[in-house]
Image 1 (cartoon, rainbow, N blue to C red):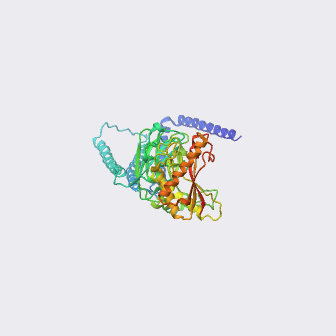
Image 2: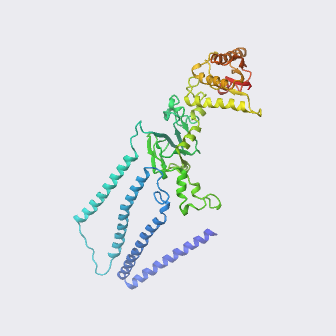
Image 3: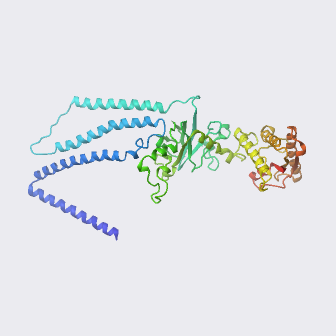
Length: 505
């Protein structure tokens, strides 16, 4: 029914317009075509002058009214060091183009009014005016020279050539439909190499080369994780894409760079305000004091829920909007704490799998440090436990043997073994069992002998380092106590292990 009424109203309006047109034609015939045309020209000229005033006043007043909602004005000042220079260039450009905009429209509408067709008025035609052409050539050339030169200076300031002496944090942003993969370097401060031929959608979507030791401590954020960056630190962002054209856009930091498949780009910037400081700045303006959720008037204010964001500024597909990522700027100490809590992608997803080129060959500094802390904490928690609820068995993940024999791979096992020596010295009343386990491949009796021999090797190492033999029992269990099914390579890998069983504390 609503559509029928709307159609009826539109139909009646069309009839009215047609009738008015017919009345105008009839009036023109009665009064004469020339009289009607002059009256129409006069009316249109005056109407254009009125429109000019309303239009220009509306442009200026709306700009002033919405000033605090535009980047670079009110509370939305730049959150990066270079952004203030960019905002200045935009303001200078706005000044000159604003003058041209206003003068052009005044001349446009004034000429339409002044030179409207009236009695006894003839058009003046001239083919050439050198003075006028010199004015509209030289003046724009001077203005453009100034704008281009200041723009080039700003560009060189924003994109300096970084040297080894420049202390900066380099991260990587890879865009794809429809998300960003953000990669941070680990403790070594270096991002590992990538190769598109190594891309595996299941385990290595970025094509990271795990043979490059710089890759093994790299951190890859999940799709919903905040991008965390430190204030007052030089940040270099490597930018690339895997499928179509995207755009890395941090509006509050005045950062905007295309992400092009096969053509890496980069951007350098320095955040100068933390998220908390920017919120405090917003809180001083009344338009940010309204509830963040209109349906919850008692909830947090708009300024309290503000977040910096990463957006894609290219129309990269229907899911374009979902590429939004939150960005949090924190102090350097807070950033260091956050980064230390992140686990390398290699450690969580590659280490100990068939994709791991370093399995049983090498331990990396971050693993040695983390494992030492983990082992010390596990033993200390058990010793301090008074409830009896904690397990007394600790898996010694970083003890490795040569394939098929009992000999220790001492080069990569010594860190775990030396940690055990330290713990036995720290807790002198500790008595332990060193338990060896195997998978079910081969003869069960042979596996039992192998597990016994491997446990003995661990005990011998500890004794040679000064641990009393009477405090340790070496025992092999062969294949009789699997942790997981032996039907898969991953399960068999976990079943081949050495355990520390605390007998008394």
